[in-house]
Length: 238
Image 1 (cartoon, one colour):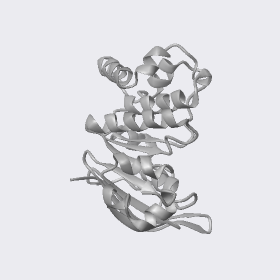
Image 2 (image 1 turned 90 degrees about the vertical axis):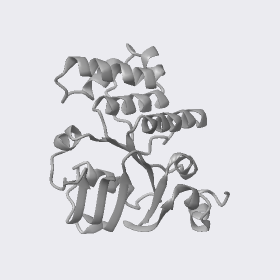
Image 3 (image 1 turned 60 degrees about the horizontal axis):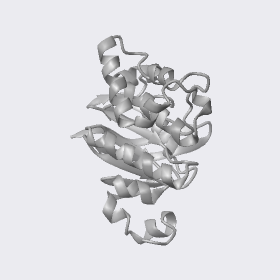
């Protein structure tokens, strides 16, 4: 069953068309990788789904309901959570305070405590840095905070935009394993990632978009050996 269905989506910035008839689906419990060069429309896709951009045509259905035009907080409340590129944590708040921000729509104190415990268990480094200000953390640790904050919102579908950008290889591997762990707990993931090799390693399926259009789709294992993907996104090496 699809948790997210996008069909024939058009998005424009002024006179520039950023998405052209884009379609994709994410099934329950699935990791779907969205690949493409800079400017292909990957971030625009996530922004349209999360309500930050209004499409000019097409449909976006989440859990069977049309969410085009819904306000971002309403979309988050439904369990569709977006971690944007660049982390965007609050530098003067502690790790714990940053996580609490993720639960600003939650009114149940016991449920908040349960989600915090779950986040700290999945991201033990955050437990170690609990009282440290966000701005003093490494880039990788800040990315963990951004992901942890999203988990506090209770996502059924988590959208991640370039979570490994600017991170050292060891931290990239850690982030990828965290995403795998989140998915193993039952959360579907739509992953935008320039590191195509890492993304396809953990994804079930993938899409490649160019100039706002879907040009390839398939099982991640098939895309990882497709000559077009290998040449364009894997450095010519399988």
